[in-house]
Length: 143
Length: 487
Image 1 (cartoon, each protein chain N blue to C red):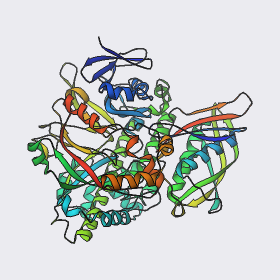
Image 2 (image 1 turned 60 degrees about the vertical axis):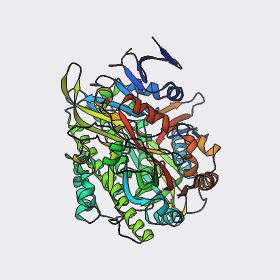
Image 3 (image 1 turned 90 degrees about the horizontal axis):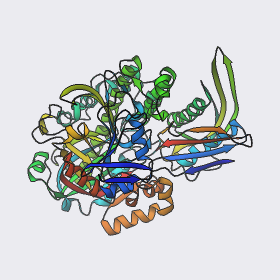
Image 4 (image 1 turned 180 degrees about the vertical axis):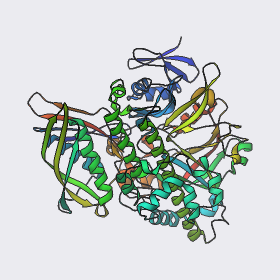
């Protein structure tokens, strides 16, 4: 359970597992933070919450990571220590609406040596159930 | 026929340095790789070839999908990829432009010689590092509201001219005179603008940098003179793009395509190739937004260049005009442009030429080359790693036939960032460069120095040699780093 940074020629890939969808999403987000900064301080920064909605499960993961990168730039804080509290889905008329409630601690960029991860990509993205009922995800980030 | 087996993908040799992956399955055209066998040995090691094959699935792709000599694995479209998609019946693909819209390079000349600079290296690198925003959260040369962002998006370097950050001559030495027509600021999301407003005039991090260099070789005296380059001369190279504004714009449109053009998306082997059909509202919207982001990136590089002039003025105690700090040229290497090309049996067709990690390389006489260079061909700037040379080329006579007027964009990565950090330590790299090569490096993060160590890149000399031999971009001059700052 947790994440690993994987080799990718130009970019950085995160492979993550969790016993729930929430834990897996949170682990990918922690991977994104690790790809941005080698030494994340354990205390600094305040927690903040965020919500994301999307039309599918993978799209939700994409939009969640996209939102974290957006918030990093506009808040001038690196989001770390991710917690995904809930992921819900509602179906109506053949369409689905997925929603996510999460929080993170925002470490001021001025306090750390952080590198810019430019964006989350769909390239080679996977989000699958594992045999033991958990989830595994693979996401490539553009650096 | 000579073939090259690349881990299951067979390439057929068309002629020297031109290899073809024949059309099969759902490929709409063959794929071509322009490389020597030495470069192919490196290219075959990651998913570059699979990605260039995938690119041939895009509707409207014309002649071939082409991988440049510096090609390497990207996301969806490989880095070093050129794809010309029919602008009437084809499509436009944000992923094939890349996240960093109009990521590119500009070179500014000076009349200083290397000897004038010796002894000032440390002062210069410190002052550049202190004055040019870099890294994450470092702000920009200009802090602006959204109104200013809109003006920049609409007018490009013309905005910089009006506000005292450029001179008229800068515009005359930039593609499209630094202002892309058809820019639609209203097609850029509020989120993208919010990210951009604090980053106007900033390098960012990763492989972006500013480098003071000396010209070590001029290979072509006539073109060298037309470009104003001579041996021992000091020049400045600036490599960066449209920052968060461009990144956000790419993802905004990827998601819209996913929601509105699922049918087309389902035909493609990689979701990251997502494309909007030519003629659709979304294709128009993306093209307008991308053009606006192109303007933003030009202004970004212009502001950094302006600030560099000020730093040189302080360090050398002379006006920048007296040091003749003039823009040589600015090239984009993540871009799609509507261009007219001759295809097949002499038919002229309008194409969205996607160059992702590839540089436009229009030859002498082409009407889109700025007047200043029309007789010799456009300048092409190919940055190497911080321990190797960079090159200035000029658009080659064969580029229109072979590559839709394109060539390589850099050395191309060889080693992943994670592996680089295991192999190198930033402090050692920095010290070695200074002691052995007299290259002064300053970075926000030691990890960035390790990730960008000279050893993680391909041999830029070989990339340029192949470009030159193919006649798509001809060697004009070579430069070597003196000072380098990065995020």
